[in-house]
Image 1: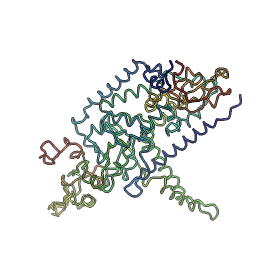
Image 2 (image 1 turned 120 degrees about the horizontal axis):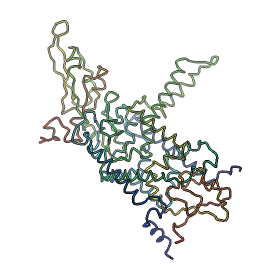
Image 3 (image 1 turned 180 degrees about the vertical axis):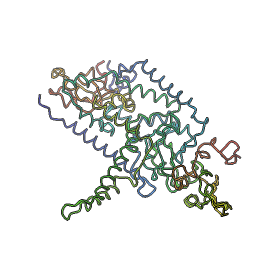
Image 4 (image 1 turned 30 degrees about the vertical axis):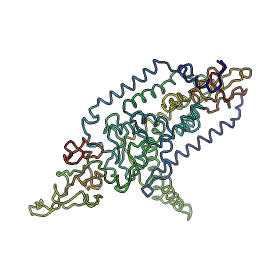
Length: 246
Length: 314
């Protein structure tokens, strides 16, 4: 054939793969496709799948897309883990199910989400963590803090402790105190400030959990409920995000 | 047989590989809080050049981070010139190339193992599975994408180990305060440590969960280079497969001078991609990394790369 060279080159692309130097036939392409379908079905039918169960430990970096979209974008590269200044962002092992292996989750015992930082959203190459201005990021809730009254000192031991409230970074602090008359171990009455969380102000940054002096199992901890990115994982009916949002 | 001098094309490739490996190291170190809320440099550089990241995240989410369009440049250059990216630009490929060059064995043994193997289909299977999974909404590319793999391993295993090792060594020197006569070693070691901490080391020692699995997988992938040339690149890498599919009809083709070749097959030794360069008609462009090793190795200068339209002799 005496076709011009560019046309000959383009025509080459329409020949079957094995004629183009690729050792692939129809059967291998089908097998690969079936493997892909199979792995997705396996992952999708996991009980940890989106909207079935909510894992309290599945705390995503601020600006993260809703879980399903997040898993469609995140390439588990670890840039956010590298850049996080407090070491809070960790590779998920089982928190997000098998499909979430090595995706980022926050572990407040190791670090916390620094209020004045949005580096993870700056470095994410696929916008699984959306690049947000710092002011916008500061309004995003990644979870909500809860007190464990069996362990928090003012509740459990009638001792004064205000560490969590002092670290709380929101403009109006999300941790507030109720002064309560309690009994000391020697039977004498005393007044302690018992901390509470205002779930409307809490952004779930976890600095309270990180700084809590009960070192092993903290007196205050963050769980994923209330996260801005998930309208279903809400505790407050009037949050504007949940089922009863008005 | 005396070893021939390595050709200038091979040296050019080695310089390019070292250069891009250095760029990778640089952007890796830029992803740090130092000490303002801005990352220096183009920390996403390699990911934005990665067509596998672009295609899988687009298929899965029907959205695309605009920067990822940069990867179309790589894809376009691959369609025109073949899978050169693996041989010249990929920093993970450079690491594999380095380790694989430590492989032992005589030329005869290598001729038997370095040619094309049917198992080189494996990464195409993996690519197919990843793309189908992405089409169904779950992006699994990151488990096997070379940059994600390398960056993740570096972040979670290598960098923390490096930091810890440096702290241990310099800490020991400081503790024991050795001196040679009146010369104190810490008068050197402390400024050096201070400099390292300001430049390449982390602000604080990083710790991560589940690093053992990542370390084992990374070390295995690196050591497999001693078993087969660039094991990861040939049998696993889905980005390589994607570039192979895109670059299967390249305009840069290998050509053999039939009268010069005595079919000694020395060209197969150290062929990075397992592309069977020994004969124009057997050569597999989708597996060729354009490393120029075959051309450099040929004792009779029978192989050349030249611009040619594929299938020209129809």
